Structure formats: structure tokens, C-alpha cells
Length: 314
Image 1 (cartoon, rainbow, N blue to C red):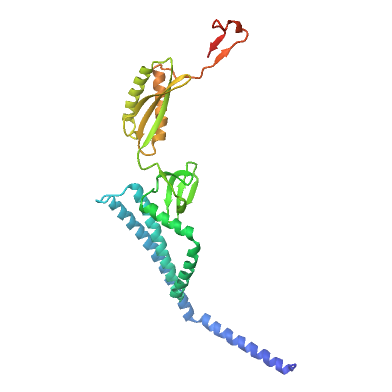
Image 2 (image 1 turned 120 degrees about the vertical axis):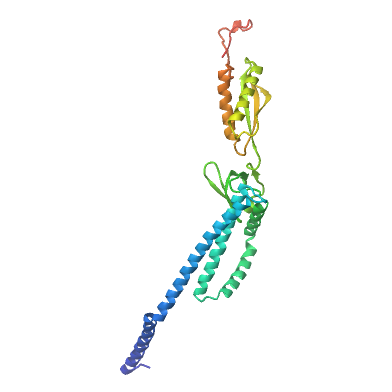
């Protein structure tokens, strides 16, 4: 049924009146002081919560540093490497807990039902947990790595096919920095075997070769004299290096082996120093370092080979 012109006008007037009334309500609410007071109070509460969380984290970090520094001076001492690991882990845990609580408090300022939200999150987390077995394995492995002190921040380790210095240990992953500067992020569940090079002293093993024509006993005397000097000069050498003796008779050289016990991870540098010092000392004493020798055969003088002619050595 078609509406008359008067009917259309009445519908338009009613609609316009409804919009006008709604706009007046919103205008009164927006322009009224109650809304802006509520917004200001909420903003101040959020700002206060954020500042409070920041201050708590800062103070907590300082207290953690003081706690572990006092532990090193008390009757129950811990190593520096373990102190660094536990300090970083405790600080990270404190940061996560404080900021999570701050986030929950901010939600409460918006009148959000936190109890129902956490209950729903717990049910969802339980459902996800059944499919997150690798995550659970990583966290459990990380806990035992820290609890058993398998390795700590700053240690040089080899694990999961990589070698390098440990820069961070978390409950889920560990970070290892190799010599080239690459950062390897390894899930703790993949760390099934670890070789830790930083726990005990290292060993520098250096092989020194001299020519057959040289006086072997004189060479041993010179090297032993040098090794005694090196122990006094370098603090990273734990004990006086040992000359183990002849370990190989090569094609043109006699090889002698030097063993030096060093502080952890100092064996590479000490090995380079020993090689340099031995070379300089042998040159000074006139003891010859062997070099490759080639025997040349001349066909033109083949007839004189049987008499020992035609052979030259270089």
C-alpha cells in the first residue's frame, strides 16, 4: 500500500527527531565533565601503573645485583660464570612477572572481568599445551641446564653442531656466538650433548721440528731453557711447559712435542707464542729448521748413476 505525501513527511520527521535526540544525548555525554574526568582518571591510573612497574623492575635489578655480589663474599660462594647466568635469568623473570601484572592491572582499569579472561586463557593454554610438546621439552631442558650448571654465560661450548661463546641462557632457548660473530639460537630441547671448554684448564700442544743434521740434545737443552723463561713471563701458563721428547721421525725432520697447561681458553694464544719464541731462539742458537729436499735425476748422465754420479739433492 502506498503511503501518502503526508505519511512520508511524518516518517521523515520522526526519523529526524530520533537522530536529533540521539545526537543530543551523545553531545551531552561528550561535552559533560563526567566523561572527561573518567578518561583523565583512567589515563592517570595507567600512567601510574606503567611508572610503578618501571620503578619496580629497576629497583629489583639493583637488589638482584647486590644479592649475588654478597653471595660471592659469603660462606656459600658461586663462580662468576654461574653468577652471570643466574643474574640474567632472575632479571628476565622479574621483568616478565612485573609487566604481566601491570598489564592485568591496566585491563582492570577498563572494567574488564579479569577472572573470566584468565579462566578462558587457562583453558586455551591447556588445549594448546597438548600440541606444544616441543615447547614443554625446551623449558624442562632449560631448567635442568641452569639447575645442574651444565654451562653458563661466557663459557665456550660445542653443542648441536656449533661452537662458540654462550651469550644468553633462557628457559626455552640458548644463544651461542661463534668466532665469526654469528649468533646461533638453539632450542634447549636440542641440546642433548655439551662439550664445555671453559670449566677446566686448557692444554697447548706444539710440535717443533729440527733437521737431522742438527744436534738433537743441544736443541732439547735450548728449548727447555726457553720454556722455563716462558712460564715466568706469561701468567696464563699455569705450570712450566714440558718437553715430552721426540714424537716423530719424518722425511727430513725430527719432531719434538711441547705440552703447556694454560688457563681455560688460553691455549690458542699460548700455542702461537710458543711457536714464535721457539723459532726465534733456534735461529739465535744456529739450530736449523728443516726444509723440504728434492732429489733430481739427470738422464744425460744416466751412465754414471751406477757409480753414484748424476744425483743432486736440494
